[in-house]
Amino acid sequence: MAMQKYPAAGGIPMQDNRVYTAQPVILSMPEQKLNDDIVFSTFSLHFCNPCCLGFVAFYNSVKARDSRLLGDYASARSYGRRARRLNVAAIIICASAIIILIIVAVTLIDLTSYRYYHNSSK
Image 1 (cartoon, rainbow, N blue to C red):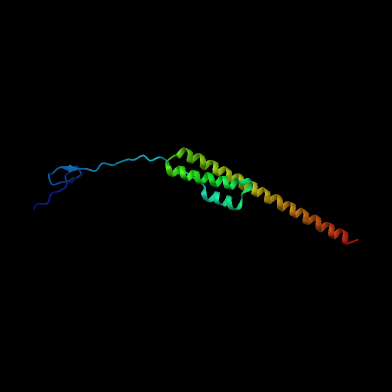
Image 2: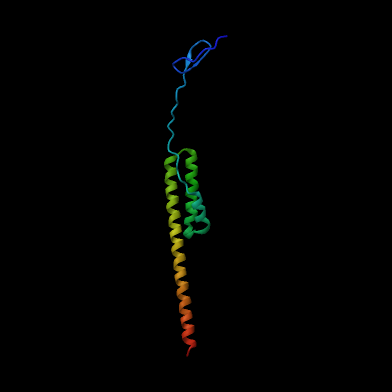
């Protein structure tokens, strides 16, 4: 049995001396990099939930994930953007409330200590 060499065309020889070459297949996939911010929404839901913004953000994140899995990328992008905006709003409102609470507490403590030391010296 003689060994048959590969032809110059660069294919694989078959038993009947025909040459088959592989053709590349190019698939164009739609951009699937959609951010649903589910972790951010879970944080907002549990720790920063003013006026139920964290809950609404979590709902939109779940809807974004569901839409992405169903192949509806336009609505998934829309729900994802809405979830991110609601998360940011919830964080800003909570951070502002905490800062205001700290300022009020420090002012009250300072005012109370001033009155205590000022009245006790008389």
